[in-house]
Image (cartoon, rainbow, N blue to C red; front, side, top):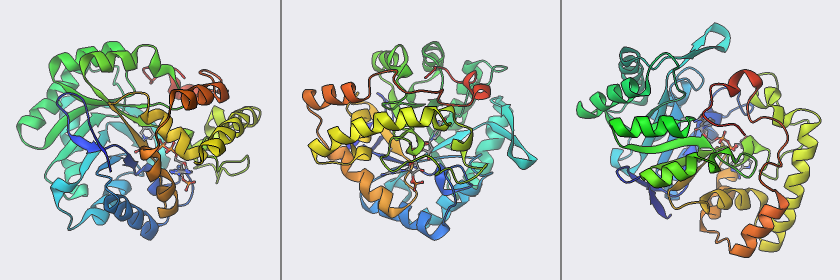
Length: 332
Ligand SMILES: NC(=O)c1ccc[n+]([C@@H]2O[C@H](COP(=O)([O-])OP(=O)(O)OC[C@H]3O[C@@H](n4cnc5c(N)ncnc54)[C@H](OP(=O)(O)O)[C@@H]3O)[C@@H](O)[C@H]2O)c1
């Protein structure tokens, strides 16, 4: 497995990261604990070292699952990226974001306990808290670095101006943000800012939450707990248009001798040497498909054909439900 360094001061991580969100709760349909753990083990054995989670993923279930999967492993052989701050009420009702320094220390104490570790490699607020200046949030995480509980600071879904303000307080290792053939808003300001400041990117949604995996078809949404039930990109009228883009991509993939998912992942990795795609593989089968993508070399001609198949801005529907769009640093 190739490695990439997250930013000028961040850790060296595997060029492909594993996102564990879909292994807990119902966001991407029913989960299987034994298969989830086997998938984490298979990823580590294949050389994946970066594992991403959030303390709010199924209310801590995801961190506990990872603790079980990682038990007994050399702590220096993998890196944990953890998001914090999203508030929930009973029934999984969303309650905003809390990035106050005292809250951060509280979230961190719980995460360290659930994960069964003494430190987190990259710790990041899941969203901006409009009530707390980013400088205060980064300052509080820096204190936790000084105390030895955190190694690096990351951000998630913020705009270029926020990245600059945060980086002025303490070097930022990476920004986690949605980036895929269907979601290219980062290309305007965010990606150039990251490159200018020497900050990495952990790109999520590289498969559009399954939409551009080549395995999606209308009717696969598993129930109301499946986040795609509420996603404009998957709604009737939009999904058919978006799947037509996938069919165009499938023709390029066939000519290249790879799968649609591999082409979509490789495309993101090809957009900059500081970008690490996170894949939401939940089974060993999906992981086995994703892994070779990082070895796929895309020529200028391949990139042109991909662009022709899925031109920038061609996806139909917002990447999040309307109520969530205002909490994001960039649009679609
Ligand atoms: N910072 C943030 O705001 C944020 C937001 C969302 C996610 N994330 C992180 O990003 C990680 C990646 O998730 P994502 O939302 O970005 O999802 P994704 O990788 O775009 O999509 C995952 C979905 O695609 C399906 N899929 C089909 N073929 C696949 C293949 N070959 N490899 C992997 N998945 C395949 C998955 O499995 P099945 O077909 O088996 O269901 C799953 O339902 C999450 O786990 C989380 O850690 C961060």
